[in-house]
Each structure stands twice: as C-alpha cells, then as structure tokens.
Length: 476
Image (cartoon, rainbow, N blue to C red):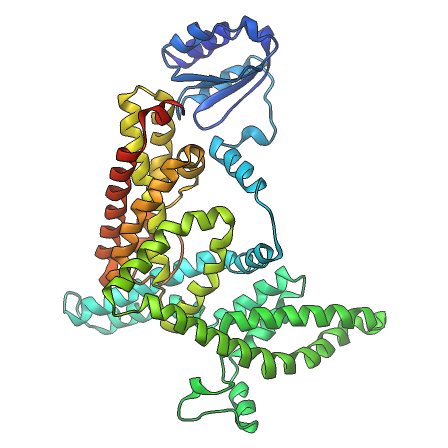
C-alpha cells in the first residue's frame, strides 16, 4: 500500500479528518488526539496493511505504530491535508520522553550537582579527547608497522607519524589549560582567567617556587610536595572555583572606573598563592592516593581481582548513569589519561552498552516468535545506534520500561567487562563507546576489546532469553 492510501486508510478508521484534533510523528508511530474516541474503529485500524500496532489508554490519545521510515511520510500527508501538528516537546522520540520522565523523578542533591558541574567541564572536550585518542593510536600503529618493516622507514613516513602524534600529544600536553577555560565558563568567570590558572599549574616557575620553599625533590620531582602539574585537572578546577569566588568579591569592592583594569590582577594576586601553595599540594596528594587506590583493582596482578573489578564496573555502570553518578568517573578517566596516556576504566564500562544490545537481540527473537510487531520495530530501529555506542533509544525505549531486561543486560555486560579488564585493555579517550571505541583503543588491544563486546552481546542475550518471560514481552 502506498503512503497516501495508507494515510487515508488510517484516517478513515480514526473517524475521519473532522475527528482529529492534532497529530504528530516520532521514530516509529503517528500520535493522534481525537475528538471522539467512540468514532475510532480499533479492530479495523489494527488490521490495516502497514499498521504494526495500536497503543491507547482509555482517553482520546491514540498511537498508530508504523515502524521507522514510514511515519514521517504519513505525517507529511496529514499536514498537507491541513491536520494540525502538535508541535510541542512531544515531537521527541519515545525513548527521549521516557528518559526525561525517569530523570525528572530523581531527587537532586549537592553531590549530584557537583558531579554534574565537573562533567559539564569535560563534556565540551570530548571531541578533542576522541581526536587525540585516535591520533595517538594511529601514531602508535604506524610506529609498530614501521618497526616491523610493514611500512618503510623513510623521512616521509617519519614526518607523517610525527604529525599524527602531534595531533594527540598537543591536546594532552595543555589539557589543564583547556580545563581551566571550561571551568571558568561553568563558574561564570572570564574563560581566559581560568586558562591562566591552568597555564600556571604547568609553568616551570612552580618548581622554582617549590625549591625556594624546600618542597622540591630534585631526584624524584613527582614525590615533591609541590611540582609542576601537581593536582592535574582536579586542582585546576578547584583553583578556578576559588578564583571565581575571589573575583566576584573583588568586583563588588572595586570602583567602577577601575573594574576592568584592576579586578583581574587583584583577583589573581589573591587567588594564585592559595592555588599554588594550598590547592596544588593538597589535590596533588589526593590525586596520587586516588590513582593508587584505583590501581589496586584496575592494575592488580590477581586474576580474581581483575575479573571481579571488570564485571562490577560493566554490570553497575548503567544504574550509575540513571542516577547521574557516572559523571563522577569522568575526572578519573581524565586523570588516568593524563598520567598514563590511557585509561583501563572506560573499556570496561563501555561493555554496559553492549549488554543492552545483547538483551535487545534476545527480546527481538521472543517478540518475533510472539508476533509483537511493536517491539520488533522499535528494536530494529534502535539496535544499529546501540551497536555504534548510542544506547539511549534501547535503554529508555525497550529495556528500562520493562525493568527486568535492563538488569539482565547489565549481568551479561559484566562478562565482557571482566574480559577486557583481565586483558588489560586501555583506551586513549572515553567516548564514544560501542564498536566505534575501537578507534581509540590501544592498537595491541583492539581485538580484545571487540571480543569483549561480542562476549557482552552473547552473555546478555542468553541471560535475557532465559529469564525474561513471554508474558513480559507481550505486555510491551
């Protein structure tokens, strides 16, 4: 049936155009508000060739499931015929609406707000992390191939390899400056002043200052009470926050005629000693202890510890996402990348999304057997995105509304997390996940990363298929 005939057939069974208040489309369905529900012939509507299902409560809001690709064309026909489009926030996909409802029911706290702020500082840098990670990985790969003589070592190939590495190393070398700029934006401070805090953190004069105070260990600079780069991104964030508070106070006290010229320098004169003499030593110590604590689990030589760590990280990551606590891992990823050039945490938690894909495969098979066209169409439209690392349509559109599949997906993902942690898989960036993350996994671990994803798919699919009942699938 062509689109115009399909659109007219649906309209006829909805009671005709006069019975339509307004309509809209999402990814898989046309949503309609009708004047009189009694004029709708639900049995005939469900029987139309091309209609995959009809969803409605006892009210006048009806959803006609058509599957991806056809709903927009049908809605275009309706708009051309003069049917009013709803045109409000419900223009979003079902999974987006479910997501907002779930998020809206969560209580906020100062702790969550703090985590959100930290996450918002790093989020704009994710594209640079990705570009940097891919460039560093490609640079390493070219070097490996040159050493193995698969690529000839010539001045041209060496220049190419150096240029590729330059893309990645430049960003990481000045990461604290970028962090300072973004932190200033979050704290309502001039971004360049935040960048100055970041630049000061890695300036050589920090070591001069430390030496003058007797805090510098020339033999092992990293063991100094204060040294260049101490505290890393965490220290810079705290320093910029302090500077923002100081700047606001100075601004209130400063005469208007002197504000532009004097407020920045006076604020810096007050905040810089606090940053260099207090914040950097303290956050430097905290960062080292945090890294050492995480290293007890992530870098453990004990196979049992590695496996359990990877399993727990992957299995519990998405519940953390729902609570908004996953953002707390962002500075930890950054600290590891800053210190080692890669993070072992991200490849493990990236398996969580693969678990959702695996669970959805199992649900698709069950839905296909039970002739649940609604579920199969939603999963078919969302799985490709899930494979590429965009898991929200599957999570908020399929597994989470049913609850149990969300849990079985996590249980299955844990096995993939355990594998990649056991293999020591490292990533030079922390987004995106899915198969795309292979582009920034260290070259020697790419195969192990992909095996981990496959394990997550299979384990989650098996657990979901066994423990999710047909009745639950039919209720979707």
